[in-house]
Image (tube, rainbow, N blue to C red; front, side, top):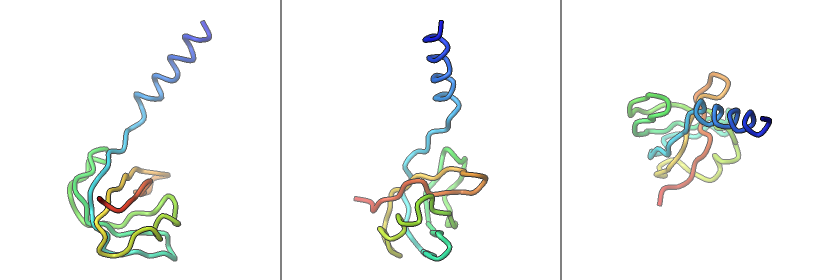
Length: 93
Protein backbone atom coordinates (compact mmCIF):
# COMPACT_ATOMS: atom_id res chain seq x y z
CA UNK A 1 0.00 0.00 0.00
CA UNK A 2 2.84 2.42 0.84
CA UNK A 3 4.54 1.73 -2.47
CA UNK A 4 1.31 2.47 -4.32
CA UNK A 5 0.87 5.77 -2.44
CA UNK A 6 4.46 6.78 -3.14
CA UNK A 7 4.15 5.88 -6.82
CA UNK A 8 0.91 7.85 -7.08
CA UNK A 9 2.51 10.92 -5.47
CA UNK A 10 5.44 10.76 -7.89
CA UNK A 11 3.12 10.40 -10.88
CA UNK A 12 1.02 13.38 -9.78
CA UNK A 13 4.16 15.50 -9.34
CA UNK A 14 5.38 14.57 -12.82
CA UNK A 15 2.04 15.28 -14.49
CA UNK A 16 1.46 18.63 -12.79
CA UNK A 17 4.95 20.03 -13.32
CA UNK A 18 5.32 21.95 -16.58
CA UNK A 19 8.29 20.86 -18.61
CA UNK A 20 10.40 23.74 -19.86
CA UNK A 21 11.32 23.11 -23.48
CA UNK A 22 14.58 24.45 -24.94
CA UNK A 23 14.15 27.76 -26.77
CA UNK A 24 16.51 29.39 -29.25
CA UNK A 25 17.35 33.06 -28.89
CA UNK A 26 19.96 35.77 -29.04
CA UNK A 27 21.40 37.81 -26.17
CA UNK A 28 20.71 41.54 -26.60
CA UNK A 29 21.69 42.81 -23.12
CA UNK A 30 23.17 41.51 -19.87
CA UNK A 31 22.81 43.26 -16.51
CA UNK A 32 25.22 41.43 -14.19
CA UNK A 33 24.45 43.71 -11.23
CA UNK A 34 20.73 42.92 -11.37
CA UNK A 35 21.16 39.29 -12.47
CA UNK A 36 19.06 39.89 -15.60
CA UNK A 37 19.38 39.06 -19.28
CA UNK A 38 17.48 40.38 -22.29
CA UNK A 39 16.81 37.79 -24.98
CA UNK A 40 15.28 37.97 -28.43
CA UNK A 41 13.63 34.56 -28.51
CA UNK A 42 11.31 32.21 -30.33
CA UNK A 43 8.02 30.95 -28.84
CA UNK A 44 8.21 29.63 -25.28
CA UNK A 45 5.54 26.94 -25.22
CA UNK A 46 5.51 26.16 -21.50
CA UNK A 47 4.84 29.87 -20.79
CA UNK A 48 2.39 30.23 -23.70
CA UNK A 49 4.54 33.11 -24.99
CA UNK A 50 5.03 34.21 -28.59
CA UNK A 51 8.39 35.17 -30.03
CA UNK A 52 9.59 38.56 -28.73
CA UNK A 53 12.42 40.37 -26.98
CA UNK A 54 12.19 40.56 -23.21
CA UNK A 55 14.06 40.64 -19.91
CA UNK A 56 14.43 37.56 -17.73
CA UNK A 57 15.88 37.05 -14.26
CA UNK A 58 18.68 34.48 -14.16
CA UNK A 59 18.13 31.61 -11.72
CA UNK A 60 21.92 31.40 -11.48
CA UNK A 61 23.51 34.83 -12.02
CA UNK A 62 26.89 33.15 -12.59
CA UNK A 63 25.46 31.64 -15.80
CA UNK A 64 25.34 35.16 -17.26
CA UNK A 65 29.13 35.11 -17.42
CA UNK A 66 29.04 32.20 -19.88
CA UNK A 67 27.39 34.28 -22.64
CA UNK A 68 27.82 37.74 -24.12
CA UNK A 69 25.73 40.22 -26.13
CA UNK A 70 25.25 38.92 -29.65
CA UNK A 71 25.60 35.23 -28.73
CA UNK A 72 23.00 32.83 -30.12
CA UNK A 73 21.80 30.70 -27.22
CA UNK A 74 19.59 27.79 -26.27
CA UNK A 75 17.78 28.32 -22.98
CA UNK A 76 14.93 27.20 -20.77
CA UNK A 77 12.62 29.56 -18.93
CA UNK A 78 9.88 29.19 -16.36
CA UNK A 79 7.98 31.19 -13.74
CA UNK A 80 9.87 31.11 -10.45
CA UNK A 81 8.22 32.93 -7.56
CA UNK A 82 6.08 34.81 -10.09
CA UNK A 83 9.06 36.04 -12.13
CA UNK A 84 10.02 34.97 -15.64
CA UNK A 85 13.32 33.22 -15.06
CA UNK A 86 15.99 31.66 -17.25
CA UNK A 87 16.65 28.34 -15.53
CA UNK A 88 19.28 27.07 -18.01
CA UNK A 89 21.30 28.78 -20.75
CA UNK A 90 24.12 27.76 -23.08
CA UNK A 91 25.63 28.98 -26.33
CA UNK A 92 23.88 27.46 -29.34
CA UNK A 93 25.91 25.01 -31.36
